[in-house]
Length: 140
Image (cartoon, rainbow, N blue to C red; front, top):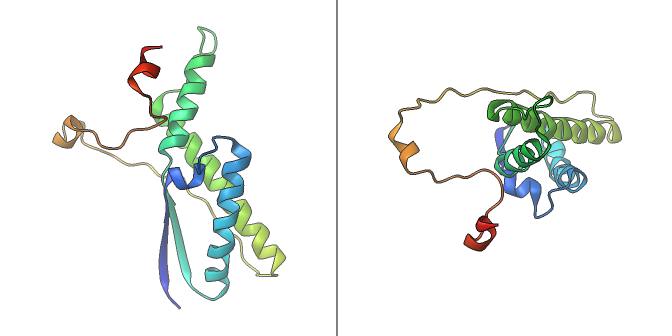
């Protein structure tokens, strides 16, 4: 038995298609492999990024925002994307476990991280959220 941490990037989950159906399909493919590790007796923890998903959901929030229905704040959007990705993973693992008669269930957890707002690394950000734009696209 091994202890394994599987780390998936948000860009890998998105795989060039922003739709929920395509992202869930990508997660399902990956979870088939992870399920085999678990069924073989390995202890597996899965962590994931969500930068593209957060950015896309923020854009949706801002485009639909109004006085009566304001956009959700960034921390809530982060939790929303963690929840949806975790749900897709849990669902895919549980479906695979049912298919192979494996007698356990997956569990998804949403986490919080505390950062120091005065951390000097914030002066030189290296990991954006959401889509990338050319200068001309940005001007529009």
